[in-house]
Image 1 (tube, rainbow, N blue to C red):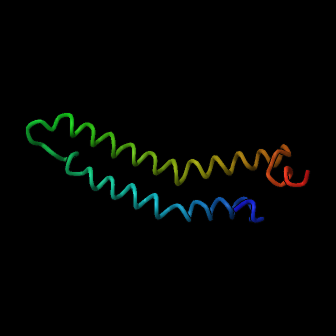
Image 2 (tube, rainbow, N blue to C red):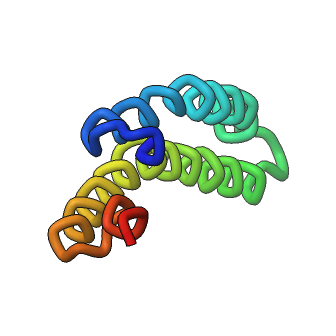
Image 3 (cartoon, one colour):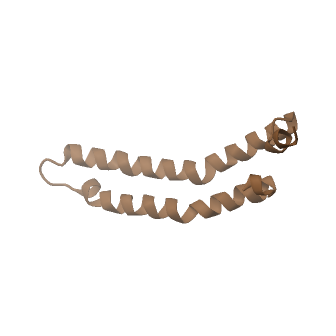
Length: 94
């Protein structure tokens, strides 16, 4: 989207908004699928419960990273590169 001439802020917001539904749907479905294993209390569920908890926790963390941390990091780095003259626009002008 940056290549199409959009401003940095608009590009980051558009990209994050575009990825919101697929990322949330994937994480939600996988978490709901692991819920019975995470809540199991029967015989032999010691390992199963621990594994399910780790998987659900990893899905939550990766969802937060994908939707909030990575766009913020991209925005900060891209702004820094533009100030230094290493941005996409300066490369295109050469």
